[in-house]
Image (tube, rainbow, N blue to C red; front, top):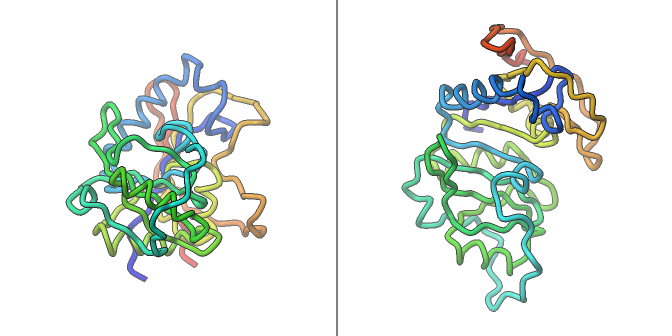
Length: 240
C-alpha cells in the first residue's frame, strides 16, 4: 500500500491528558504557542481529527435529523470541485455521518485555509451524503461499519496526492492509527502542569468497541526543553 508519512502531533499535561482544566492554566500558554509553531514546521498537507475533536473545535456541532434523501446516492467516494485543486485538508473522521458544517473550507487563525474531507463508513445515510454534496464537502468511505485507517490513508494519496499527514487527536483516533502500525513519528509537547482529572482524555485511548491492543515501541529521536519549562519529545516508531 502506498501511504503518506504520518506524524502524531499532540499537546498534553504532564500526566498525559489532552483536554481538561490544565488548558486554562497560565503555565500552559507557552506550550500552546509552541504546539502551533511546530504544526507549521511539519508542513503536513492534511490533518486528521477524530469525532470528539471535530465536534469540539472544527464544526457546527451535531446535525439535526435530516429529511429522507430525494435521491439515493451510491456509497461511493465523492470529490467536490472545492477539493480538486486544494493544497490543504482537514480530515474529519465521522463514521455515522452526523457532523454539521457551514462551509467546504475551514479557516483557522494562523493556519492556511483547508478543504474539509469527511471520512465515513457505509452506515452513513443517503440524506447525509446529499447534505455534504450540497455544501461542497468531499467524502470518502473507509470501512463498512468501522473506520480502517490504512484505507483512509490510501485514499488521501489516491484522490488528493497527500504525502504527509498529521494525526492530531483525540486519544481514540491516535490509538486507532497506532494499533494499525501507521504512526511513523510522535511529536509530543508537554505543558508543565498536572491535570489530574480522571474524566479527561489521554494521549492514546482504546475505544470500547475495539479489541485489546498490543504495546507499541518507539525510539526517542530528540528531547528539547523549551521556554516556560515546556518539553518537546520526538519519537520514531520501532519497525516490526
